[in-house]
Amino acid sequence: MSDNKSLKAELRTEDFGSAGARRLLRAKRIPAVIYGKNAPVHIILDSREFTNKMRHFSETALLKITVGKKQYECLMKDYQENLMIGEIKHVDFFEVTRGQALRTLVSILLKGNPVGTKEGGVLDQVMHEVEIECLPKDLPAALEADVSALKINQSLHLKDVVIPAGVKVLDDLSKTVASVKGVKAETAAVVEEVVEAAAPAEPTKDAKAKK
Image (cartoon, rainbow, N blue to C red; front, side, top):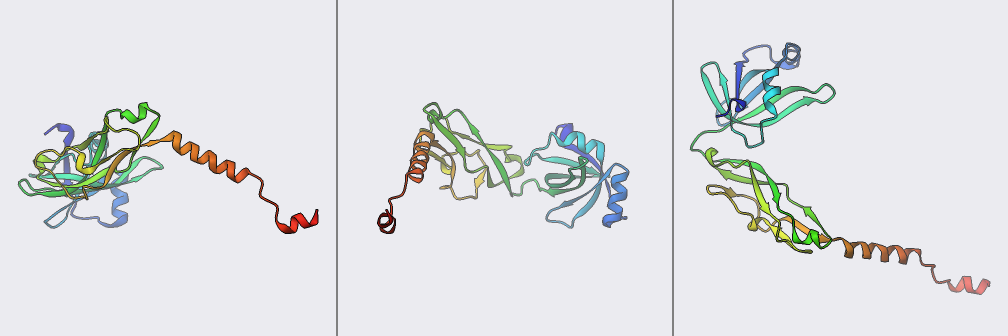
């Protein structure tokens, strides 16, 4: 496993609560937790190490966290950040077990330039992530959806996406992943609506009588 996917941590055995968390943050340390099928493990990360390596983490990256003599394989599931000063306040890790299937969300990346965009259409990505189930060793960084063959008014569905071996999609396969829309037709419809709205209304009988 790449060193960028490895973290060292200390076991957090005291100083819990918001006051304790603030003391840790002032000391450039980050409170975190590892949860999964076993009881949660509260840990402390080095702020500098985590911040430097965090940019290498994807939502499906398997991380090795060493706590004393014990190692955990985890996914980073969530983190809290103080956006005003760019400080990570807390991190949640999910422990995975080799040989045991896990469920998680992975991103969908569109690949290729649709035929329809060359004809004036616009590509619209409808679905950005999908829930899958697989063993940790088969966990993909993302799923690629090839949209190069899409013409105007055509759609690509989840059932059309190539799924890697060992991966099971849990979402409805009939869901639309992406489509190419015809801009000219939509623009014409909008212009027609504007013209109709701007047209003078027919005078009523009362208005005619007053003339």
